[in-house]
Image (cartoon, rainbow, N blue to C red):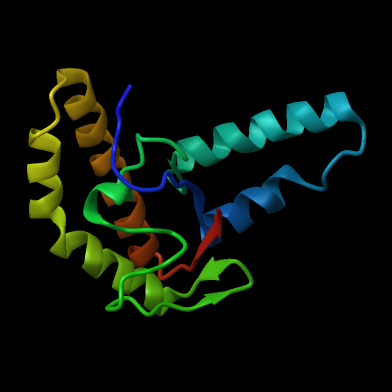
Length: 147
């Protein structure tokens, strides 16, 4: 298991335009537990397929922690706005800029990982986040998050 410095953190991030579309397709939330479970499985599969979801774990496998990013205390240069648990469109662009500015640092940190499977994990996670954040910017969408 990876051991990193600092506090562990995590977040579930959703591209709002995609998430809202999937919510509309899925229909109203069922009240019965078994039906709700099936409904959630369908929604989760649709979100995974859409590329509109990114999970950054609460443990030492947190990707953005590698570039000194915290979901609770943002770097000074971001100064983003969260409204109704959504990162605004302008703030999503700031996050993309922060991400791009720290890619070299991220690559160096990943190269220093002792275990090959840890390096592979973070390389794949970085590709996943890069696709996610660029898609949000391309769609001019806010990002809903749960931390």
